[in-house]
Image (tube, rainbow, N blue to C red; front, side, top):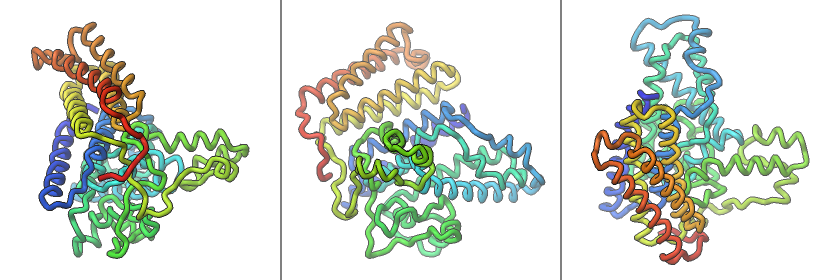
Length: 423
């Protein structure tokens, strides 16, 4: 995991720079595709994902090294063949994993966060799951294991394959000619993120679009059907941690409420959106009926709150980067505690962005906990080794957090928490 953390240490700033470039481009061409609060939410989701993944918080059902050891029938000798087979195997597995996520109730929960943004831009690419706590992806790599592709090759290619899916989350690139027949392009992925009936569950490929064409899930972007983004059951929150578990919470409630024991069991593995008949009738859930006229989630947000949210995002990013930089020195127990501070921090300020009245108590408690930790240890996870006044800056951060929570809850007019049309 330390190697993965090192890769993220370089990848995260690179992604953030590209997001900023996209925002600046949209500003100068007067075609902005970013909403401040939505973008902060997306980037915050990315932070939760990288912290969770870097800590290895997942139960692996079967590891790829185990499969190679027990299933390999041959051992590829040619260097170029090993890398080519590995890439194709990862992309093929990625297609089917993605397809499962769209078509099975329980698997949709680990993917809904990625589709939850009602915008489409580079930032929403970073909306990645923290609810995928069971690792089964290796099971989809059986073809690679049978061919004896070494674990080291898969381990190196997998993050590269994931990072290569970032660039096509944009509306600023049109159709790309002959490349549309080979790779997944921004046009194809706009279709994938759209909630238009013509586009739902289409273009599930990750790098190559051949799988969609082969298995009947390809859909070209149509000039007369402009994509509308989000999910049919809107998240209605900026809090990425809540979004990660909204769907599974609905499933759990439906499983509890239905009178049928068979429905209690099968609801988890039924097609996405399926609900027991008795529950669906008694407890209807609002869905978007007309994708061209729904109101985007936009609770009241002053310029001061927007600026404060950006500050909290930057501060959380800085803390996380320090955690990665100091990964081995902090130790596993310390990393878990550090990760908790980051998670609670993101939960707190995104709840404040939602204008929830209880957000102030989260902010006060995490501020007090942070100050107490520094008081008891005299440091912030070893930051004083790199900066003599480091812990004082962290103290200042927690004080600002507490003051911000109080100010935006009690002194700045909260207004209605009902969503209104975004501007």
